[in-house]
Image (tube, rainbow, N blue to C red; front, side, top):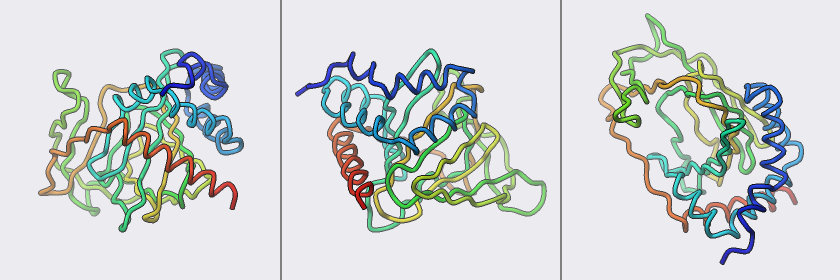
Length: 247
């Protein structure tokens, strides 16, 4: 049953304040980083807004409809979209499991800049790559978003070699930022519940790159995320945040 109006949720101090932060000079990477740090320093407005989302049935249905399960078993929740300034608030959730999730195991870049904050869990392990002429490992390169008729399709773009550049670890309480030139993989450090807040800037390029190892299928469809899934994930994240904040 809905108990918080859509108007109240949209006018909540968190998305309103975030829009003010990002709108000063446009949603540049520096402002995305500042917004993520503001959540890290004072998470209560964000957590209050999260809790409010769960109380409105229409908002739950709206968010579930634009969110999805990644093929590797974690959820990408698109909590809020804004046209002016252009940005999105996402929550990526890796449910507790018996084994560590492979996360986003295909090296990839993004069509937008973003900054993220580890809200719940131990943290994330990233590996960043660069294309090289010699050495490294062979991959098949694809362009995502390159086919206007099928924007979610992967379009083959040749054989390349990738070499590791660095392997940053981002633990709970830290912020990680990424521009469109970075090619990386992302996975949680351990098998516990992990949730990251992602402040995503405007799309700045129509296509991005995804790499698959030789013999790996490029057919990796996303899964439907139900309203029940959304409620279950959000309830778990809020409970974990409360527990970790009290410890």
